Image (cartoon, rainbow, N blue to C red):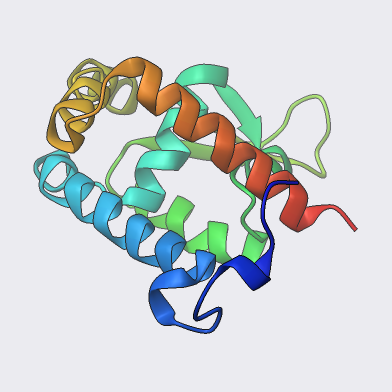
Length: 150
C-alpha cells in the first residue's frame, strides 16, 4: 500500500479524516436533492424507498429493509408517510401472510416520470460526468464493504 500514516504531517487534523470528508460530502449531496424532491413531496429517504419499488415493483418490508440497509423501525414510519400520501400500498403478502408486501399505487408509479430527470440534474449540479460518478460509486461501494465486513 502506497504511503502510511507517518506520511501525513497531522494525522489527527480534521481535514485529514476520512469520516469528516464522508459526512460533509453526504450532507452536501443530500442538500442538492432537497429542492428537487420537495416539489414531488418526498424526502431523500422516501425517494430511496420509491427507487427500490420502481425497480422491483413489489417488495416485502424485510426485503426493503435489506436493500436500503435500514432497520424496520426506521423504515415503518417512512412507509406510513408514503402510504398516507397515496404513493404506496402495504398489504399482507398473498403468498406468505407473515410478510407485509409493499407496492406502488398508480400515483406512485406515475411519479417515476418526474423522478427520471433527477439523476441528470444531480450530475449537472455536481459538475461531474458519468465516468466520475461511476468511479466515485465504485470507491464508496468498496468503502462500505470494507467497513461492514467483520
